Amino acid sequence: MFGRTVVVIVNYNGSVDTAACLSSLYASEDVPRAVVVDNTPNDPELRKIMVSYPNVNYISAPYNLGFGGGNNLGINWAVSQTDCEFIFIFNNDAIVQPGTIAMLEGVLDNHPEAGMATPRIVFMDKPEVLWYGGGEVSWLRGAAVVPGYLGASNTLLALQAREVSFASGCAMLVRRNVMQQLKGFDERFFMYEEDVEMCLRIKEHGWRILYEPAALVLHVVQASSRGEQKFVDRLSPLNNNLPFYVFHSVRNRLINMRLHARGKNRLIFFAGFGLLLLKKVFAFAWHKRWDGIAAIVKGWRSYRECFVLDIHRC
Image (cartoon, rainbow, N blue to C red; front, side, top):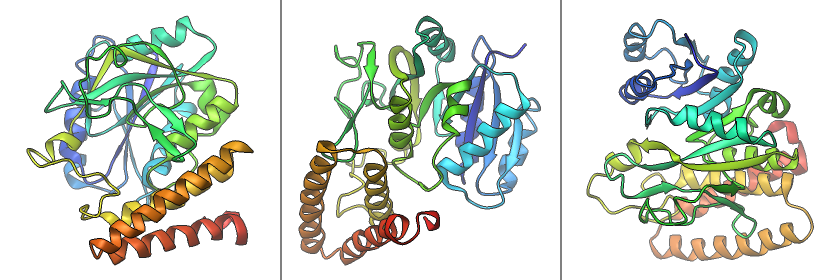
């Protein structure tokens, strides 16, 4: 018998990770329903893996829809094809510990005013290191801030259940009716900041977001892919994929703040983000990362096309 939750997983060239993710879900005592959206699409390796999970619905996207668009395909399936009470957005490069989904369901059962619950997330290779232990949206940065990120995963704050303003899209449990109210993720966000935007909308609709540290998820790829290498921030000049991240980060933070920041908060953002970009321009120039500077300009232009020229083009 299936549980009360549908798990939505988006795959993009990560069939091995998706297999481990599904294995962890079906090791839970309360087996959830799940849908895997293939953003590759038609990954032959993933199709072989799906044979072992006949009860998991498989959707092949027509092309790479990005994080939000891929998840929305799964969300729409869950709402239209099941009577689920909750939808669990779950990264394919993560593993859930037994009982985690049930704990999050319990949080929402006990708090009808909450629309979303989120677990503690640690690195798979180094579970003593914190990836997410509750987060807040920073108007100064126009992005999320996770206190204790990359620090110890068992600090007093990391182990404190509390209300937060940001839940990571890596693992978030959302009420079905709330997801219907929100109409899923904003698909203008191809990658990055889409979870921030959803959390801002949830709060604007009057729902609370609750963090439950007893519920535990292990994030696989971000730890294992770098092995013993030093962690490199996405906005660092040393990041090989710098242009991609800079473009989407600049564009999406600007869109987020245009949509949700009001009055003083908007002024705080433009002052803080302007200083951050100025600092990054100097850093990129010092390291001769002209592609990073070009990505900042490209991100600004894309934002301008959305809100100055034609919002429907973004």
